[in-house]
Length: 334
Ligand SMILES: NC(=O)c1ccc[n+]([C@@H]2O[C@H](COP(=O)([O-])OP(=O)(O)OC[C@H]3O[C@@H](n4cnc5c(N)ncnc54)[C@H](O)[C@@H]3O)[C@@H](O)[C@H]2O)c1
Image (spheres, rainbow, N blue to C red):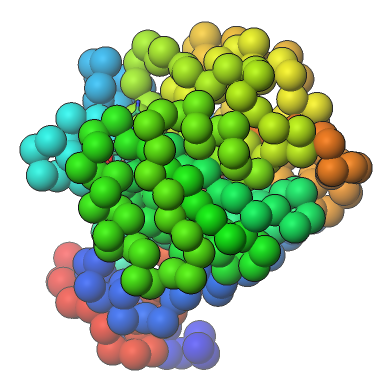
């Protein structure tokens, strides 16, 4: 899109509101989002991209609030995401993660779009996991395991089957049995791989080559995954902070990665991740310098993807460009 097309929108002092239905119309596919993230993580090595650690505070055992800010002149935009996560929300018929993202153009600082952050978060989190799986899973991995059968499980099944074509089965577990069976009934007709219900995280972990943990992030986690459950060569991807992986289990991993070292350290300083004594690489270092890369099929690798603001920014910026071009969304005068 040309600068003049974007300016014709920004000079009217309107912002464009994009809800989940709007965002679904933009043709922003999972492979396209994986590529957006891959490019951003590579460019982070050489360009100015500001991504301070997120503000992430638990209000109670089950509820957190979080704010994530970033800007990057090369992307042309800045963003701020405000969200909450509440583990009790699925019981209330509400999404666990809810929020909004405000996008500003970098040239003037003018806010140009307000978007459903649930959509952005859902897509970019699975895309970041797919990026890790593409780079670090053992060749010919056949079994995926997912703990927690909610939104992220759905997005991860889509994302990981696209980047790891050798997958033949996916083992799942949810503490609420119905949700696990609903997940399988909904997803089985859409995927060629076999979906298998299990009776606990042990069954998932013991069988899987790639394990995605997506239980709720609570204030005082009681992680369950034990060292002896994890197969040689396995790749663990934690999207639930330290909710699932026990500290002694983490110590048995050969390589530990994260998406952003400063943010990880910030959370560690609050008392999280007691099993982690060092991080081998972040995703930028992995992609651009080969740090923390798998060296053999026996190594166990654990990636802590806490989610970073720049991921939100690149996806939101692309969604905005497409929405303007396609005439999608609702204009609101500010
Ligand atoms: N790291 C990131 O960037 C990132 C981004 C988005 C979401 N998340 C986290 O991912 C997790 C899943 O998010 P979601 O949007 O899919 O939520 P969701 O509510 O849609 O799904 C969570 C599922 O986990 C189940 N569950 C609860 N406790 C469990 C347990 N102990 N063991 C197994 N299953 C359990 C619930 O019944 C529910 O079905 C949350 O912790 C969320 O905060 C992380």
